[in-house]
Length: 476
Ligand code: CUA
Image 1 (cartoon, rainbow, N blue to C red):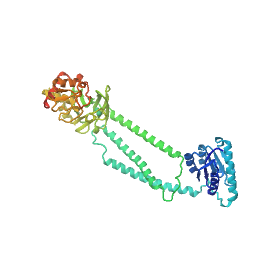
Image 2 (cartoon, helix red, strand yellow):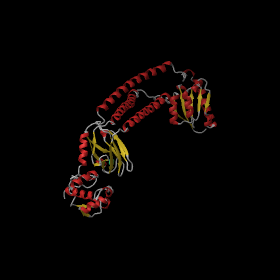
Image 3 (cartoon, helix red, strand yellow):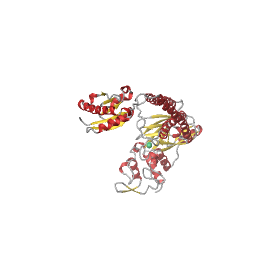
Image 4 (tube, rainbow, N blue to C red):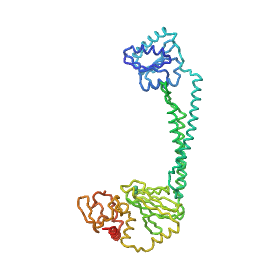
């Protein structure tokens, strides 16, 4: 007989002790465990992978669901009757015949011996007969747990909603489009609070109420699925997600709807600046100026990499993609100053890629437009300062000596720059012009080679002269 690993399942303790010790005497048999009901046996069988399951029980046990589950995972089951020692084999085909016969002979010998000697001590407790008391008590008990948990979930949900509303997750709202967005967000907060409570309360309650108390040695009940519960926890999240996607689609429709008489603004993002063109007035600005109450449509694009136009107070957000134009609509509802942030990691200067938004009364906006259209009487340096703003130079080059992505312009003109190749060059008109038109040709020591080579297309000779004047004015 080949080596056999046996798991004994029996409710009759004397019986399994007798068989167990008798089997242990046999050289080829290893008793891997003894358990006292089918559910415990299921757990053990999964963990220990015995070759044979020896079940000491009445014939009715085969109608038990747990027995069928055991049959699925066990190579072979021998059921031995507690009353007459007769044996029944299930799944015989999986174990070789001769060794199974040997094993049965060995068992029979011990069983018969025990049967004749220990009849008086033998107290069979039928496996299947669970009394009413056994069933109603846990049910009443679990209903009690359920009610406590339900009440706790409700309380924690309310507390989380209250707490999240108290800490003001969002800054002030300054656009019409943000109203349905904030309403939807508020609804999300409620659902999030409920889900949080559901998980945390169930977990903490279980840890406290079902902890192992002193004197408890056995394993917990082995549960094999719960179809009703599984259906509920599949349908409920699915319905929730579908409901919110429906609401989301509706809000998206409202937020993107165009009103008549929109103010068009072409927004161009570049590393690391924003430019705003007003085709209606033929104005270009480095700040975004908007009249109160009139819907603006931003046609957003990028000159280099992907950026993202985001004004938190307006709530809406849109990628700026090179080669594409995406539109975004905002109707300002509050006069004030806000910040445009780039919300897409776009390079070393990403964090500095900010621009001002000024929402003003319509009359103030008209005045600003008129001021922009009036003929300019700026000096070369003043014009240069404006170009530096519009072209985004100051996104990387500070004018106050602080270190950004590129060298500061303060005190730059007339100094000597140490280049990456080890040479020193005097900063004069020629050096600055070459740095603007072909930035990669002379990289200043200690700075990354990230300046765009696009300025030969966007700057005229006069623009460059004005920029040089401006840099000159920042000190030699
Ligand atoms: Cu542009 Cu981040």
